[in-house]
Image (cartoon, rainbow, N blue to C red; front, top):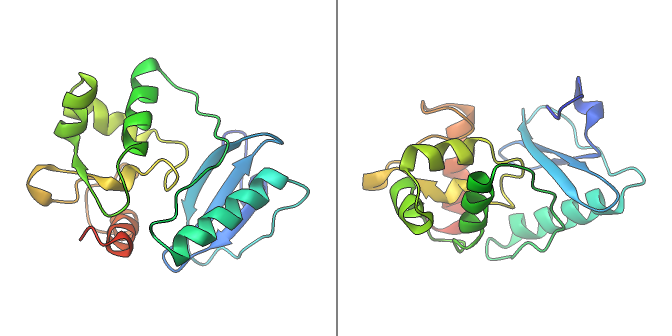
Length: 165
């Protein structure tokens, strides 16, 4: 859930996808968060928030075309290292993957630290942490989970959608 929020009402919009409901938080100028919620959570149109509306439009475009490139104003707050990881993830094109180790070498870090930054990503999908996988082609973790379940099913769906699996 977004910080300070106790439930779905804390999101400026909720967009349904086949794999989850996406909870979107936004200010009047930036997208600040996207969370994968249980698919049973109903959609909720953006209320008086142009940026949340824009996020819904662009996410829907991605769901229809995995090659769609996001162009959303993001507010990413984190350490220098996390920002570097999130910037590197945004350079991974749809349909491609990088391992945690490859990304770590690119920015001069460790695979474990890259994994931590992936887990702290406030805007998954737009900053495509799902494109970062374990060495040897294994999916690795997603949303702090390494076992098959809701979280990894989302990562698998996104990678299949993009043609990376």
